[in-house]
Image (cartoon, rainbow, N blue to C red; front, side, top):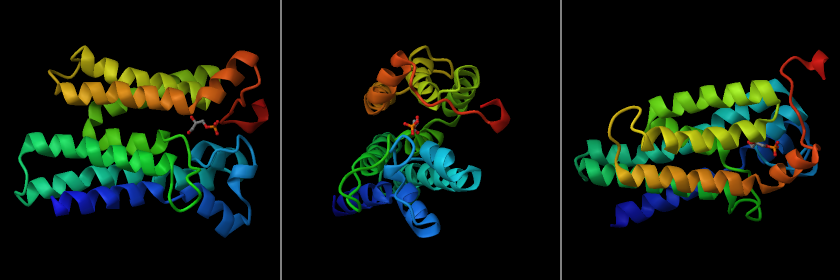
Length: 211
Ligand code: G3P
């Protein structure tokens, strides 16, 4: 129980690492939360600081979710827990990393929207469903040029794939958790939704000349 408590705190702290904020402050001397959409996440880093910075933040933020989820697998391989407990703990540690990203202890609990960290987590939890969700994200983003819309639709597609058993029978806990995460992602994007309806949401173009 002490190991689980310790790893829970570690997962939250891992998620709390404010990659976008620290990268912006350290390499560019700016507070990312005062620019672009004001979000301390990979998308806003792409928007404000460019592709290199955005890719690094995306990678590190996803890694936070991936590693936290992986902590449960370590316990399983050390024969400390059974497979069922491992899956439950993967979900729990990954969730704590997402909470850490949304409400980071290192910067006044003002974090990002949790998309990249969720991506890392679902890649570790269910790689196939995660990859299909990434493809869905790319299609929605490619058509709409809204990263937010792509993120929301992809987060909803993930539990739907599990519900319809596209990759075989799934553990119910994972399916319920998928819907909960989708709800969380839509909730963190509530202002983006308002902007999409108003027509003021920032569009992102991979080829800048099309702007
Ligand atoms: O990663 C978050 C993304 O879906 C939206 O970010 O900066 O456009 O609000 P942003």
